[in-house]
Amino acid sequence: MPEVLVAMAVLAILAVVGFGQGGELLARQRVEAALKRLEQGLNRARAEAVRRGAPCGIRLGDGVWMPPAPSSHLEPCFSAEEPIAESRVQISHNFSDPLRFSRNGLVLDGGSVVLRSQGTDLQRCLVMSLPLGVTRMGHQGANGCEADPAL
Image 1 (cartoon, rainbow, N blue to C red):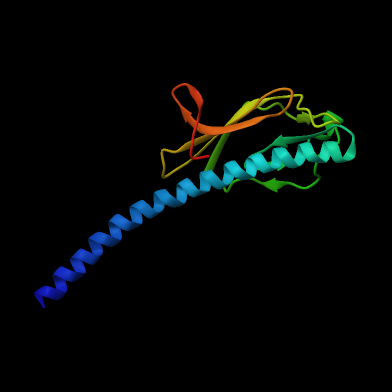
Image 2 (cartoon, rainbow, N blue to C red; image 1 turned 135 degrees about the vertical axis):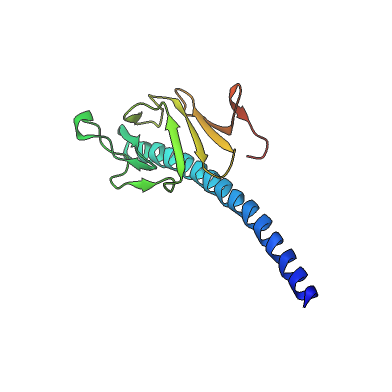
């Protein structure tokens, strides 16, 4: 009987330790997936402007890419909302509303985005420069968006 109790105690300790690390791993994966979907949305909008040969726009809502507000008088690059992140991922950005793309795919508004999630210290960032719309992804550090060789 004592051996069974010791074995159960050891298993309980391992389960608690494993659950804590598993939670952080899931939170990190949420942030990484949101970063990829963020970049994919930007690339899709740019490609759509080039395909149409006309300017278009998108805006970054609460975890989704959205069409521009009707008051902007700008054609949407895509008409339906496209999810970026689940609600547990916080997104902060300084993109304009709407983010505009020219008919040849140039970006008329640049900016940066920071993604974070509860359960992890990881903060990913994306910077989009003007006018080519070159995006750089990294981790948010003391000096802003720093390059990350893992990306």
